[in-house]
Length: 272
Image (cartoon, rainbow, N blue to C red; front, side, top):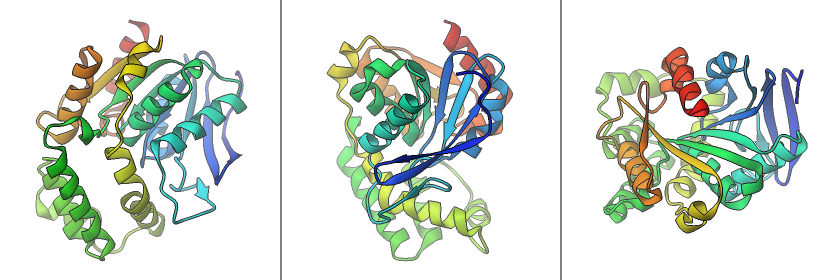
């Protein structure tokens, strides 16, 4: 696992996975859902000096194409994709940092293939099934998903941010999701709403299996995410796993906005 660079594609059941390799050293996977490899590029560059860093587009997103565009992307499927990538690269056991839906993928990988993982850092996994108000949150999720699929993009995002308790002014939402937009971004967004969001947020981890596995599991949350839905889900997961929450710089996508500080914090956890 040394000297590999640039972009590659791996054929897996039902998909062609785009992935990138940087650096040399112990294997570190950076994965999101729906965030793609590009979202983790700056963080990967900062960690490639001491790690072989694997980043990938999850199936159905950006450069990772699927053969059946109507099939859901489940945590189990994405975990199998990661397992096949690690097997193809002969790269296990690996440290896996997953954020958002990628944290769910990483936990599913730890459940299904503990031999391939030594550490999972689950950053803000949106596991609403762990919360007492799950039924209400699920109804909200169904509502804003239906709103999006009916063609009301701005209305769906307004409902999404309200449900997640993320306070964004309406003009910011309009600037982000209104007007002319990149076609690939829109395609990825639709795939997420239609096929990835619900399987990820409704997923229930096998907490007993995770506790039995000899895998170090760290649950992380952004310092600026206090009170948000993913703050609550992360706290709930840490409580169930009887571990402390690890604070990271920034919010849900702190690795994008502050890659230097985020890399420094990740190094602290990896060497702890």
